[in-house]
Length: 384
Image (cartoon, rainbow, N blue to C red; front, top):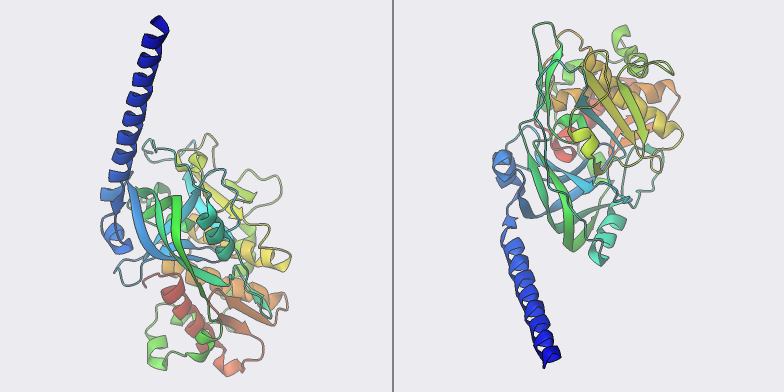
């Protein structure tokens, strides 16, 4: 009799546990918010900390890992995508620069407390990761170029903020916020699950067939800089300025270079560092060693080095440069580095040819500015 009562009590407890688990699961499901990329970018703070479901197109490029949001009317029309720390996925950006407040940061740093995310590494995720890490194989150097973009349904934790790089009257950085490369993104999705994966092969011949009109090029914010190519000794010195930004071996200059995991959201970099820096800011450079080898790593270091130089010691007139202007200057400097190294061509993700030694000298400025302008607007999704 006693055993029977005990068995009944155990069965009741198990039933209650099952009901509770089902109820909890339903509640979790109800908490997932459906949203579009533009909905989120319009007011990222209102989604901060929420689990969202987004249907969108994901692009993985040189310094890009984003859910695209074309025509959202923002300065940066995309949501930065990250994997939970420790994922060790194959896909993601090839190189990323992030700014982090150092121990001796001059500004105020708010405490960050974010719920952990567990990624479901199911069949759909493995397909997603494989497609976005499949390299494009063409002639010449193509930095961070992959073969596919992927459309999918993505679920994850949304982190939202107002990206900013603010300075005091002396030019010292006293405010840093934002996600992803250059801390330029107002929203970051830390992936929890992926489904409905559809791949689209990128047509690397299409950009080469399109050319902007002269009037469009002349109105571009970067056109003046492009016209100076070949005549400005200052411009020619930019590759050296970029490499010098890393300092000499053993220098404690606040520049941290790591190889691996540019695609992961690290709690370490989401908060104030315990390390100091000469100007109170740490510049975290992450490179994917599997995608950047030999000369490619050299070009990538030049690119990120110019960012460090421009943000740490901006040249006159560039103190307020936004993502579009910073990337324009860095890509132009990367091209100059390639030319100095004797490279014949340099292509950007999506098929935008930035440099070809076969171009007539008289057309160099126009062709370079054409490709770079369209790349930044169409691929990087930056507004001028």
